[in-house]
Each structure stands twice: as structure tokens, then as C-alpha cells.
Image (cartoon, rainbow, N blue to C red; front, side):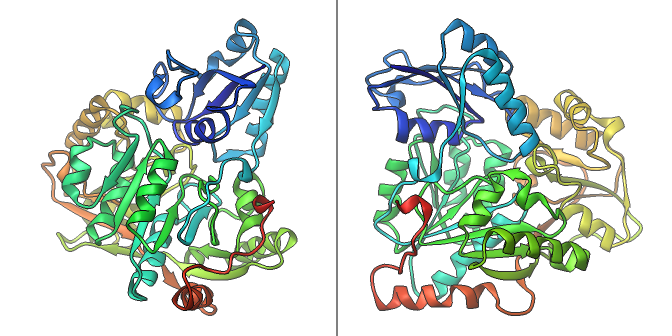
Length: 452
């Protein structure tokens, strides 16, 4: 009987448990640990999800307590089950585990990828903020225009009541509001739903898959961070970020996604140095000689509103991309700079938890990260924005900030859209798969390591 701890960040950890460990009589999962996302520790993975072998549920602890847990609970093995970590960080974590007396393990995708009865197009990435969301919307629109019903299944973000979030279905903005989501969830759900897409997410992806299959001809897997898919893909798309060359072979599991990809989209090529694009292409070809490589741009679309030229502008950006994603800026900053706005420094006006965020991530500059993992954090975000003396707020997050908090300043939304650059386009790369699906009920799945 092996005693295991699963290191996670409220997502991949629960899925790995559900699929690989919940019903395994030779393994006892003694705890989860939590990192990256504030407020997700000191909870219990409930018995209703954990199953009959865990009648009390499973405790979730802060990752900082891992060495103590290993010694106290005589842990044999620790599974790393979250994403967007540098290779250096992965090995530091491995060293913590091994020095405390346990084995350290990474699961390969075949252990946890569920097989669907309908075709799956997976959109994954090299880093948080590479452009998965706009790529997923592009792919979904392509298949919808070809006449197929599409369900978009999002990587989990179970930061609230886990039992209530077991299987979530969003068809309207009211569905999203009723779920009382975090800002990060709104960022991922609102725009696809606004465009008429059916979105699924939650905790139990076997149940989610059953519901999504019943309502769709095609599932688009919309990954989180740079994680691998939870469903075995018929087409695996990986988005690389031209502004972060080298990250495709320096972050986990970024390189896994590059190696598994059928199509690799090098995004933001229009904003990058040509040498950096060549570096990414060279790194790709060293580890994946068969993938179709596509170049793309992510131009910013700015909603109508007051002029930004010469105006004092407060920029609000996507929180996860700026924090554990390490991005320096987002769509709001790009839009403000293009309009020659005077970007106001929000840091002197930060309130409560936003002060802690700026201190924890000092490289965040003259932008407000849209942090909202709790009601208090949302109130702090609102107070911080209201404190700033500015003419316009430019919101670079993919959701409508004005629907959630009160603003005394006018708001303009800025968001990325995916545009093709040169050939092959992403549509051209996907065309054989669209034709294949029209000719028969399934795509021609290629052999992959997880198909063993």
C-alpha cells in the first residue's frame, strides 16, 4: 500500500486523483497540497467526489507544509500535478520531496487522458498568456462554420465549492453569474458564451465528458496554463509565444505539448523580433519534425469609447498571465500605448490584497492585475481602481469588468483576436481534419505516446 501526496493548484491535481488513484486499492492519497492560486488551501476534497475509500474526504494543505506532511504521514511518493513551472522550479520541488524521504513523480499523459466518443481538438500552450483563448475561439468558429455543433470544455478552475462545481454548464451569461465565479473563471467563460458557444468546466471530467459528448459533434479542449489535455485529442494544437523564445523547452509541461503537437501556432509574431521567431522554430524542429508550424498575430481589438490619446489611463490586465504566467503586459497596455495614452502607475493606490500582489510580484509595473479569487479581493480591486485619478480605465482582460464592479471612470475593453500571418494558416492546417469529419463520424487519429 503506497501512501501518496498530490501537489497541485486546484485543477490537474483533482483530475489525476479521479482518474488514476481514486479507485486504486493499492494506493492511499493522504493529502493534496495547493500552490499558485490564493485561498485554495485549507479545504477538503469532499467525500462525494473522493469516493467510498475516502469517507472523510481528503485534506488540502499549503505546499509549504509538504516536508512535514511527508514525515508525519509516512508518505512514499509525491505526484507533481500542476503546470507552468520552469525546469529549475520543478527540480527544486523534487529536491524538497526527496530530501524529506519520499519519491517524486510526474505522470505521463496516457495515465489521465480520457477517450471521447466524438472528435477532440485540443488547444494547449507553452506558457500562460500565450494566446490559447483566442485560438480556441478561432478553432471553434471554424468547425461551427463547417456545420458542426461545438462544445468548448475548459481546463478546471475549481476554486470555490467543489461539490457544486462537479460539472458546470454555461450557455448564457446568467449561467455564469449564478455560479458566483472568480474573475479568472469569468475571463475564460464570458467571451465564448457571448459568442454563442456552449462551455463546460468543473471537477469531475468523466461526467463533464459525458454531457459534452451528448451535446456536440466536436469538443474543443481549452487548456489552462500550459497543461496537457484531459481528453485524448484527435488534433493537438500547441500555442507558442513569440515574445518568450526558449520557454517552449524550458518550462513544464511546455515541452511535452510541443512534442505531442500536430499543429504549433507561433503567436504574436507581429510584435516579436524575427530572430526570436527563428529561435522558436529551431527549438520546435529539434523535438518535433512532423508538426505543421503556423505563424499568427494577436492584434488588439479596442471597444468604442472616449479617446485615449493624451489621456491619463489606468490599465487593468489579466491576473494569472502577469503573476505565475510571468507576462510583462497584456492587451490593455498594447492598446494604451498604441493610442499614445499616459499610463498611470496604480501601485501607490493599491488596497488590501492588491498591495500583497504587487509585493509578491515586483516585476508587475504600471498595471493592475485583475485579481479576484474571493469577494474581498474583488472589493480590493474595485477600491484600488476607484482610488486612481485617471480619465479612462482600459481593461485588457477577456471579461466585462463593468458587469462586476462599480467604476467612476469610463471603461474601454481591449482584447486579443487571432489573425493568420502567411501560409499555412491555422484554417489550412485544420482543413484535412474538417474534411475528414465531414466524410465520416471520426477523425483519423494519429499514433501518439499516450495511445500505447
